[in-house]
Length: 310
Ligand SMILES: O=C(O)CCC(=O)C(=O)O
Image (cartoon, rainbow, N blue to C red; front, side, top):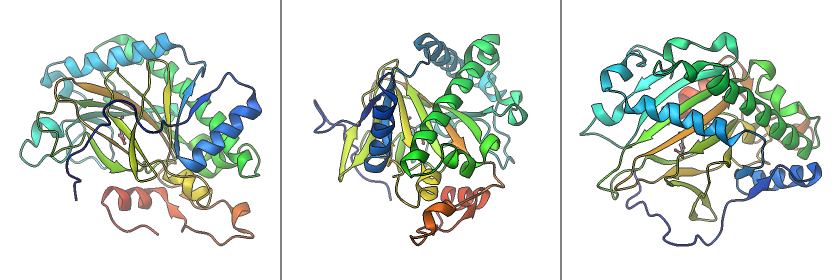
């Protein structure tokens, strides 16, 4: 059931989500990433090496797409009979009566090349697709993702590639989502996104200057404060399950703004649909497995349909 009255903290939050400065000494960084993933399942990375200009351009092109007339956005619409998420959907425009969330979306895969379908990529600018923006950003995010999974694997006492391999190695897919949250006049009824954890492995999120993302920690909602160069990292369900519960899947939600539109760009690193993910074998020699292994297709189906998951 929807929670009533989403509230933003006014003024200073009592705590802030951890910030990890990736330019620090690698041992320090690795420890900070492990601690934040154990305690929060969410943290900000700064000084990560992805050019701010690349992030700015990515956001500019995505924003331009959502400014197009509806008809042009429909050119990359998700087909009505699609079993996949890729394409543009406008729940906001089309479901005015029964809205539970207040947002439009565009999903398209950005990695691996064999899973990219350019039919769902916006056509508003040739730069959208070309080397210097989305594809370059995807390469950078993949690098960050593998670095972070490496530190998390070592934090479990495993070899550096353990979590990446558990998630499917080079078959891991990166899915870009652009979310457009129009201003919402009735804050008491709706969320941009209700309280949830992500169902994939790990998520990398950037957003425009409007805040709204909140993390749930110690029974409190904490505003996530980012700027135009930081990236929010959200540990998601599959890393929690592979780690046998050692790492948290970060709980979060998005509140609305009455006046301003907000856009965000999460990239979800997720297993291929046929890949089986469960607690890593080395972690359940002495300890009982806390989770059942699932083919990712089944896990995704259960989670998206709010069905029970062991
Ligand atoms: O827009 C945001 O900041 C978060 C989006 C989100 O939680 C999601 O798409 O799962």
